[in-house]
Amino acid sequence: MHVYTYCPVCGSPLTTAEIENRTRKRCPSCQWIHYENPLPVAIAYTVNDHNELLVVRRAHQPGYNEWALPGGFIEAGETPEEGCLRELLEETSLTGTIDNLVGAYHRHTDLYGSLLVIAYKVIITSNTLRINHELFEADFYPLEEIPTINIPLHKQIIQEAQSHEHLRSLR
Ligand SMILES: [Zn+2]
View 1 (cartoon, protein in one colour):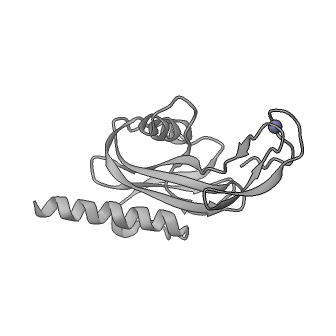
View 2: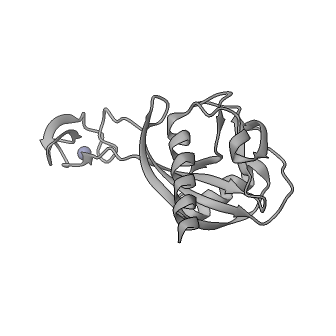
């Protein structure tokens, strides 16, 4: 998140004020308020037609060298679903369709500050897996054989997606 010291509108030094029950920076000249909002991220819980889960080993921070689910920042003008499928395509060359929303989460990272994370279940529609520079490796695993996921949020998304599946199977 960009942190301002000077007003980006008029250049005056910012002061702090209590606004809407939060301490915020404000411009004393033009009244511009520095709202701090989370950056939106889309994550793909991606399965193939054998119901195997796609996991990737990250080649960048945060979570360098950790096994994770693919995903990334949503771009301006994109729907969260489009961002999710684009990130999947960029990182793995896989195309897919959105099956359902797994959940929406908040996460704090030192690198990017506050994140709003939106996770979807994606079903792939192509089988050619080819990773880009953001990953060391990626593959589909049966659920009971996936590598250890240490990133708490990704663990949570996997658990919640699986409990959705379980509930669906009972209907
Ligand atoms: Zn100003």
